[in-house]
Length: 203
Image 1 (cartoon, helix red, strand yellow):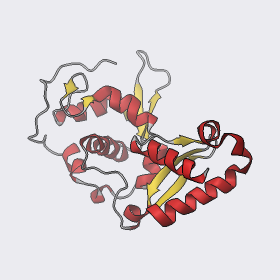
Image 2: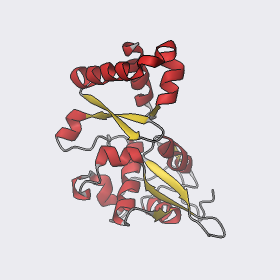
Image 3: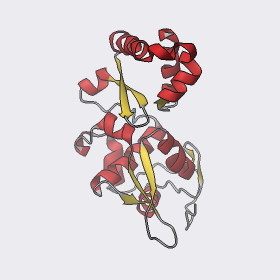
Image 4: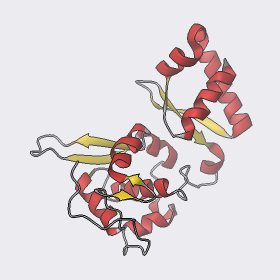
């Protein structure tokens, strides 16, 4: 059962999807649920000693876990691979939220991306549906929180750091982050998107 748990974590980690204890018990442990703590302890030991990963519980109320690369965080490097275009996009958003004090209206994020020639209202040749990725995928992965702002009419939303971002980045100094941070707050980069900018970014 330990090997099945390890495989399940690795499979979920490919898409950066957090693992819920309820799903582990239902789909993996099944009749072994009574020894759940022991199986998790063994899996954690294998990950740490064999893979250099650590199982971290990011939501103690709902028992949600993610894998963190101990080797990268020990060296002071972000656990998020910013070389990937999608992760680069995530770094831009996280940096804006950080600099704005922890919460940013979504219109600020969309305007920032437009300065980088990434229009959330248009399909990007590398990123695809940007708005869906930011408001759904990154939220599902627990990198971002997408929260409705109370008493707004029409309804407005804001972004915050998600539980996974807090664990992987520890809100470290933005100066230690990669080029995406500087691009988010400097002149637009020369890399063009696949489409012309539009004037709106409706949900």
